[in-house]
Length: 239
Ligand SMILES: NC(=O)C1=CN([C@@H]2O[C@H](COP(=O)(O)OP(=O)(O)OC[C@H]3O[C@@H](n4cnc5c(N)ncnc54)[C@H](O)[C@@H]3O)[C@@H](O)[C@H]2O)C=CC1
Ligand SMILES: O=C(O)C1=N[C@H](C(=O)O)C[C@H](O)C1
Image (cartoon, rainbow, N blue to C red; front, top):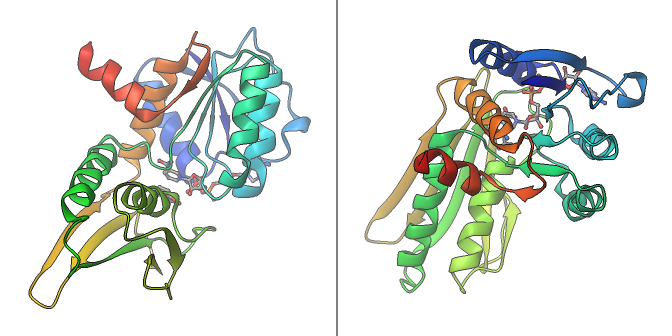
């Protein structure tokens, strides 16, 4: 498979390494405004965007207009997600966005939803989320923390929003910490005067994110439509 990398920073380089090990070729590396590059759909099977929040929407939609499917892991641009989906559909292209491509985090997402469902009737417990990442991270809270919060909000009628740091009673506080070299740690805590329940996912490196993104690209090649990591995992476990 021929892959265009949109963003060639920490994640772009990790993806390159894993993609090559799985027999793929990197045909383009985009590091600045996408209009400066020659996008050729006849030479590119899929684009993988791990760039910066302000570039993601333009990168993704430019690929759709060139008939190139996109796997996007960039966080911090989701206010434009619905618009991106529409442009994908108008161009009969294909798209997967995930706040976290790690297979372990996607299992953690399932666990979070199950726990939220069990805790929804237990009024003595408050819920909060903590995320810890390296100091270079541009966005806060992390996309993964937002996904975790949205999953809880979806299951638990006692919460109807989230806030960074100081939250109202009916909101989930998300605490974002920045610590040198941490690839990504997420904790969901339910606390009462009697006890505390915590679920934690700790990434040990960027390999899990990169592998998940390449597996998603292999899934997306030659498809049309909007997909999620749930589709990718279902396919993986079936085959
Ligand atoms: N969904 C997931 O599983 C994961 C998502 N991420 C997200 O991926 C993004 C990138 O993360 P890192 O690689 O750690 O950041 P990074 O800062 O190491 O790399 C970003 C790269 O994008 C480049 N860039 C700047 N403007 C650009 C443009 N217009 N077009 C293309 N590239 C441009 C920069 O030169 C830089 O090399 C972040 O939003 C991060 O939150 C990171 C890890 C996992
Ligand atoms: O910026 C990162 O590094 C990461 N970003 C993603 C996020 O915002 O959730 C995923 C992962 O935690 C690493």
